[in-house]
Length: 412
Image (cartoon, rainbow, N blue to C red):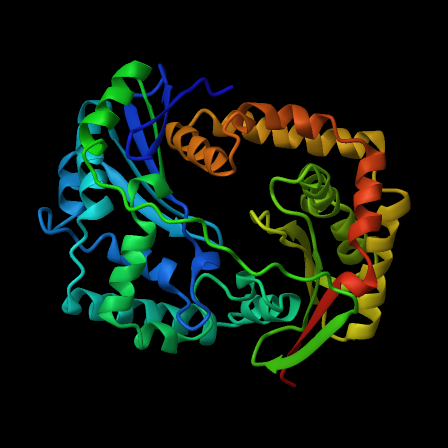
């Protein structure tokens, strides 16, 4: 359990605080409700670009990392489809340093032409190194563009093309900052060995005076139901053939989420998972195999993927993988299997709550899903899932007409 209190400032900033009596560190997490889903299709990659720009300094504090380091702290950030997250850990006595820094860059970022050009080059180089010049680097981009037709999930967080970042203008970037980086579009969560009201008061001290520029929520195009199977085959300079099959699933806030997550663990929960036992160890068709869900706020994907062993053809591998997928519809789990994956989730949750940063980060995430109380209720929701619900989820989801298959062939 993560006990917490919540409060919303007059400018719309949501604040959640947790008293952690065991830690000498404080964790400050600031989540902005902006990810790749919020980008213009002609200017993708902006959310990730801002993950970089937010460390370039403000008009008052030109060096963000310096004060963090002098306060004996550590900081980082990440971006995904749905949100951008910034976090700092530091000794509890230096908590206000983190709040000072985050409040300053929430509305005071100094975006100069020089800083923008520097970060554009960094992001474009990352695009090339991680996605264009690395084995299997474009796999995610190809799969997304195959599975989605209209929803912004059809591009990866890095963007559709480096040109969108290269061609970005200072007015476009500044407008994106003003649109998404302001109090009512953010969630501040703090975990530290301080009184909860004291932490709320500190949030008021550092953030209450910030002006807000509220905007209506983005209206995103809804992905239509897929009515026929899709296939794409590509050839790349990679060490082994890779087979991937993706199915559309319900959003993160759907009751289906818990059955889908347990289903993925049953299939690919390490060496004891069904896919590994059958396709790697027994039938020796794949060198590795995995199944996972994207867990997106909007309807996401349930993805099966595996690298084929030498001499194994796609037809044979695909047939065997589909047999395992079909088996989930009638015989999803023995009582032992399902108890094992449920216990694994509960253990991971409990171990995660030991870490002060995890507490702050989880509070921010669940608040973003519109139900912060889920942070303490999800274990029970997982425990309540039945084998029959997993089978019903599998029948609804694992349909050929709902599938997108990517054949990633190695050059011979």
